[in-house]
Amino acid sequence: MFTFLLIVHALVAAGLVAVILMQRSEGGGLASSGSPSGLMSARGAADFLTRATSVLATIFVLLSILLAGLAAVERSPRTIDTSLARKPAPQAPAAPAMPAPADNGAVPLAQ
Image (cartoon, rainbow, N blue to C red; front, side, top):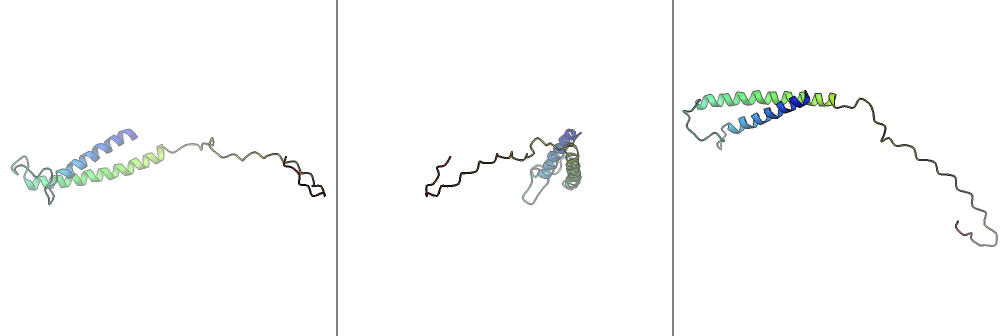
């Protein structure tokens, strides 16, 4: 289900990009060349592209929200993995006590 919706989302995104690029802008869009006496009039094409953009944008946003919700529910772990939990460090054995230094002023050697 998730993979199918992800593929549909990618197709909607590609369609949205194509429809936006076909629209006429102030600098002229990709579809600005050609005669206006083609399949549709300039006004009819503009209305169709505007409606197509709004419909595709709405579908894109709704699919994005749906996919985010599905990803949060389906991909969440069911149990907590404790294999990487920190374990307390083992206690080092107590060091033997150093003998008391002799009164002759000699310093004992390190053991």
